[in-house]
Length: 533
Image (cartoon, rainbow, N blue to C red; front, side, top):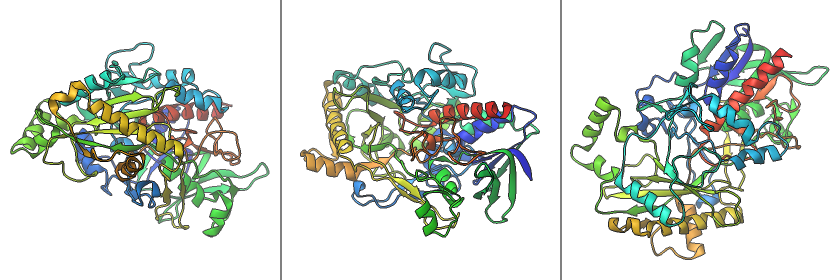
C-alpha cells in the first residue's frame, strides 16, 4: 500500500493535517490512529471528560514516573486514544497563549513563529461567536463560544481578584492575558467541538483521504541513501504491514507518542537506543528531552451562603435536574469544562508578562475521578505558565506496546519553587478579599496552619498535579539538541516531519490545544510548499 502522505496520529494536529493535505485532489493521504472511533456517548457531552479521561477506551492512561517534586507520587497522564485525540477528552478551553510566548520562539531563530506571524493562522481556523475583529476570525473550523452556565461564587471571585490587582477583562487571546475572565470554549451549541468534528468529518467524503483506526505504528521505515537517511513509510504493530509514503511521513502522535515512535525507529539518543537493542539510524540526542507542562496546585476553600456544584450533585434530584436541563436546552452544569474562570498575573513585578494562571472551579474533590465533596467548596488552582523544570520521554525497551517512561521532574528548580509559593500566597490574598467575605471562605487545603516557606513547598508537592499539557519533546530549533527545524522537518532525516505540540521550544501560556491547531496549520503549509517545489 502506498500513499503520498502518511500521517501518524489522528489527534488535533492529525485531523488538521488530513484536512489541509487532502484538499489537493492529486495527493493521496492516509491518516492512522492507534485508538478507536470517536463514537462513545460521553465524548459529545462536555462534562463527559469525567468518563473519558482514565478510560482505556479513549485514553492511553499513562502514568508518570514517581516524582520527587510530587513527594514521590505517580499520577495519571491522560493522552487521547481515539479519533480527535486529546481534543475528544480535553477541557475544551480555547487559549492561544500570549504574544511573548511566540516572540520567544522567534528569538531562538525560528523564522515565522512570532506573534505577528501566527495570529493570522489562529484567525484562519477560528469561528468566533462574537464575530471577526483584529484578533478573531469567523468562518473557520474551530468554533469558539462562551460558557452556558453561571455561578454566583465565580462572579464574586472575579470581584475579589480585581480587588487584588487582577482587572476584569472581556476575554483572553489578544496577546496579553493579564486580567481575569471567563474561559471561551471549543463548543457548538453546548456540545464538544473536537478536532474530528471541526476538521476531519467534513472531508471524509474525499476520495483521496483514507482513515484507519486501530492502526498502531511499530516504527518508521528509514532507508539509507547517498544524501543520508530518508523516511519511506511505516510498519504497523501486529501484522507487520508496511505502508509506503511517496512524499512524507508526518508524525502527529503528540509529546509522548512522537518521541516514542522516533526512538523505536532508531532516531534518537544513541546510547538509549543501543541499550535497548535498537539499531541507531540517526543519532539525534534531543528526541524525548525538554518535556515540560503546567503543574497546577489545587487549593480548596469551603464556602457558605451559596450553591456550588458539590451541593447540586449531592442533592436528591440534582443529577436528574442537570440531565433534563441539558437534554432540553443544552445549558447547565453538563456543558461545563473542568474550569470556567481564569486569571493571569505576574508572580513578581520583574516579569515581562503574566506567568501565573488560575483555573477556578465551583466544586471540589480529593483527586480526579473521586466523588465531589459533600460540603460546598471552590477550587482555585494556580499554575506556573513558564516552568523551568524539564523532564523526558524514554522508551523502556523495544516493545512498541509498552508505555514509555515519562519523567517530569516537577518543581526541580529554585525558580519553579519560588513561583509555586508566590501562587499559593496570592491565592490566599484573593480568598481574603472583601468581595468573598459573605461566603465565609475557609481554607481546607493546604490549610491555614501551613505558613512557612518550607511548609508551603511541601503543600505544593502534595497538591500539585498536571493539567495535561505536555510539550517540547521534539522541539524546534537549530542547536544540537533541536529535533526539528523551523519548518518542522526532522533534522538529518529526509521525508520526515513532526507536527504536533512536541515541537514547542517552550510551552505557551495556557491550554495547548489551540496552539496545536496553529502548529498543524503552519506545518501543512510547509508540506504543501515543499511539494510544489
